[in-house]
Amino acid sequence: MSSLLPSTDPPITAAAAGHVATSATPVLRRVRARSSDPRAGTYPYEATDVVSGWHVHDMHQLEYAFRGIVQVETDTARYLLPPQQAVWIPAGVAHNTTLRRVRTVSVFLDPDMVTDTQHRARVLSVPPVLREMILYAARWPIDGPTTDPAAPAFFDAVAALLTQSMTDETPYHLPVTTDPIVTAAMHYTDNHLDTANLTAVCAAVAVSERTLRRRFTATTGLTWRDYLTHSRMQRAMALLTETDRTILDIALAIGFDNPGSFARAFATHTGRNPSLYRKHTRRPISS
Figure 1: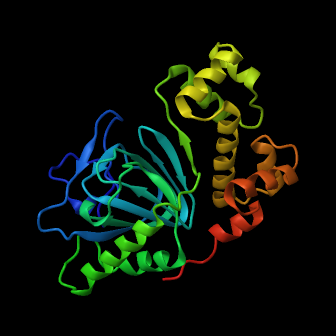
Figure 2 (figure 1 turned 180 degrees about the horizontal axis):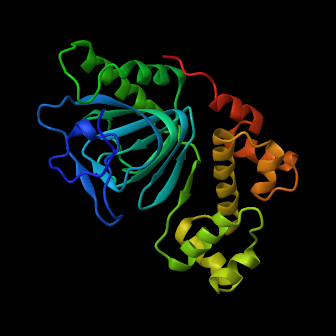
């Protein structure tokens, strides 16, 4: 399996297409497939704590998390990929991936196999049939032999099903902005989820409430209150997946006074109450 350690040895091929570490954020590493590589293939991966660094692929990537938490950052949003979901990253979209105690399988597809007119990353709900196909496709690694005649037809079927699922986007992302005031407000909010309120945030970033409301909505499309809710839910999803903390403890840690109000907000955001969500994301993985 390809190493995730930083490397400066060109060329980087699709054999390392899963997560190629780079140096500082402004430096992009472009991952290109060799002319002899297949039009599609997979990259199974297990990791404890890895940050890929900013990089870009010449192939579409669908990364499915069987276990753990995957975070993907692009220049427009930060995505949280909980278990049993997939993140779609179109070819050419620069991104930085953080993996925490994960088991994932990435499916790489030639750009002409799936048309993506929006050209942006997104988290997708994965129907059971597509989940099983991703798991089955792991037998055809992107850096392996391409002699199996069944592989091309199978990946064509994956691409067709994926195209149908492209509209099943989930709200598991937070916006990114170049506005320094809004960015500072986001950082303060994320770091004070248990106590954050608009007055405290404005004091921290030294602007009036009216100014922050206006700039926040103008640059992100969300109100600050909506951002706070989304950030709290993402933190809760991570805590439910990665820790054994009680529902009450998690509720208090992200700013809810009681587990009942937390459970209602969480169910509205994810479609499941916290206990069912935890059970779902920790269910055994078939192989």
